[in-house]
Length: 225
Ligand code: URA
Image (cartoon, rainbow, N blue to C red):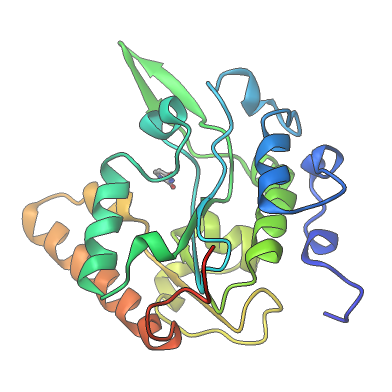
């Protein structure tokens, strides 16, 4: 990436038309509520933008907000968020010093009885949302970017990226951040078939997060955010 090419120039999905001219996190967060870059805004309560320190050295990217996130407006506050908090703490990483976001900003769901069940976003929806994620990464400029699951990894590293084959790899020279790593999504750990599989999934998530902890520096934050 040369000095005049921005990340947003590389992820030119339909949301681009809704990005503000000045792309600081505050303006981006306001503007995302008006995004109609794909149809997902129609059935979601609100857009859920990333949250955390502007100066965070670590950005974590999930797939899309879930039911709780959609209702509250905050990322990773439901069951997957609790597991993520636990895994970060076990890896010695303080979530309050990170920036947490999603590849897709609106909840995609289908009604089953009275429950709104998560639906995987389509490729065109992921691509449409790309400019918001690129703008967040550009605003925070983290040292380490962790993709939680295949949607985030493929949104940032390309559709041929396989988390199953490359999880835990420290990837350099992506132009996204000095170090990029993909690991499993906490929801996949929660979906495990039995307690033993869940324990193993949780351990692997923690192990991958531990791998990036040394790159975050003492106390993580680069300063007040
Ligand atoms: N799953 C995600 O990918 N993101 C959230 O914010 C919550 C659940």
